[in-house]
Image 1 (cartoon, rainbow, N blue to C red):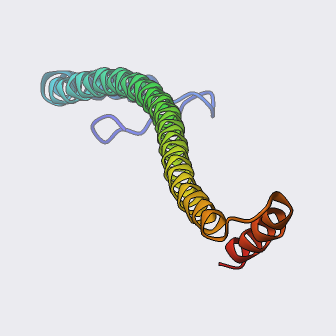
Image 2 (image 1 turned 180 degrees about the vertical axis):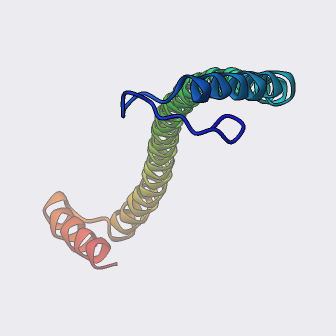
Length: 172
C-alpha cells in the first residue's frame, strides 16, 4: 500500500516491492533508534552484570581459599592439641610412676627403720632380761648359799635342798 495504491504482487509468498522498501526503511529507523538509545544502557547493564558476576566469582574463590586455609590451620591446631594432650598424658604417667617408685622407696625405708627399731628394742629387752635374770640368779645363789651355811649340812642333804629351792624359784 503505497499512498493508497494497492498493487498486487505476482507471487503470493513475496510482498510487493513498495512494501519491501518501506519495511527496510522502517527497520533501519527502528534499528538506528535502538542503537542510539536502547543498546548503550543494555550494554552498560550487561557490562555491569558481567563485572558483578566476575567480582562475585573472585570473591567466592577468595572465600574458598580462605576457608581452605582456615580448615588447614584448624587441622594443624588440632594436631598440635593432640600432640600436647599426648605429651601431658605421658608426663602424667611418668610423674605417677616416679611418685609410685618414690612412695615404694619411702615405704621400704620406713619398714627398714621399723625393723631396725624393733631389733634394737628386742636387743634392749633381751639385755634387760639377762641383767634381771643375772640379778635374780645372784640373789638366789646368795639365798641358797645362806641356807646351806645356815644348816651346815652334809653334801647328801644339799642336793634335796637345791632341788626344793629351784622348785620354789620355778613357782615364783
